[in-house]
Length: 78
Image (tube, rainbow, N blue to C red; front, side):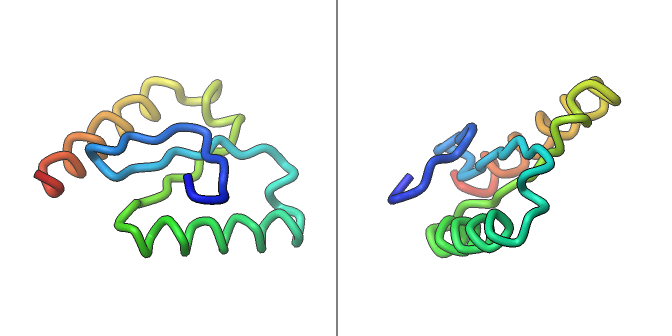
């Protein structure tokens, strides 16, 4: 999107989902993420960041959260 690469995007809900590993805790990557998030926010997108470990630790809760968030965003952006 723009000059940035995102992991997943739902354009109708204006939602971006980023799956982050430990490299995203490093200063250079963190600065890049902030710039990308600000650019996306300026275009009405919400960015959700999920640590890779969360995919395995509490999968059901994560999926429920994402579904609820997608529904809410889709309703808001109609």
